[in-house]
Length: 360
Ligand SMILES: [Zn+2]
Image 1 (cartoon, rainbow, N blue to C red):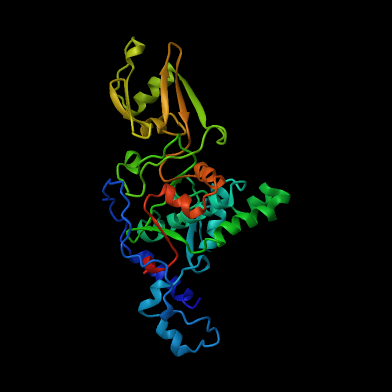
Image 2: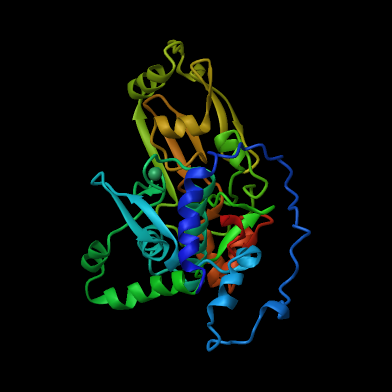
């Protein structure tokens, strides 16, 4: 508790001092590199004066702020975040308040408590990454646009949305945040880029397939959600031939579509997870992620069927497919896994911690 004040200051300074985005130079090796220097959880008796709340004399506590301070926990209440909201203003709030609005917006409150906790840790980690590793806003740490940072919902909106269930539901979200207070993920002593998505079709995706740069912990793993539990797991998007051609030509003016419709769409190449790596359309190799944007598909896991009338994309899952699947997390929780197991399932080889070492 003593370190709360200094940590806020350190954090503020640090967020300015730290160079932007450490380059994504990670090897594609799937093997988790278990950090060798983690000295298992044995309590360090020398620095554990058992609960001496009475001996709060200044000489003792001031010496504590030196070299060993990095081992301390960093509670959510002590971390101030600058949040850019949709009204264009930047608001200061604690990590705790921010996370409650994020978890409530990102996951249905009906999800299992362990899934909600996994979401809280992933969101906290992602926020720390935004603050300390790779800032993406000039005057704020994060924004409330889900397509940019993370989804966010105001408490007043939750009260309206949840009505008479508000007290019960907000407690569930609050529990997920407070029971994981300060916890975040690291890999090789670096804060993890804890991206997540709604649902995957059988397997998550390698980050490199989506963003051309990988992370050793963002590699494809099995994900257990199926159509019985995910709403709109399979969706279709149908467009006319004209819309199809116009959309492709808008992005690739050199694409060629002759009279023979069967020649419009060529080979499809899939990534190992089954998503579309690229398809040859109108003679152009177009990436699956690009087609996803162009035709507003829910994921890059799709098939394309061109018949004499129109073109239909049949899509499975929702989101980029990298990192934790939220619906998958809920299935794992229903199977009895706790939030740590869920996070380690989706983020290969990461470590869970709550010390402040990476803040300084
Ligand atoms: Zn943002």
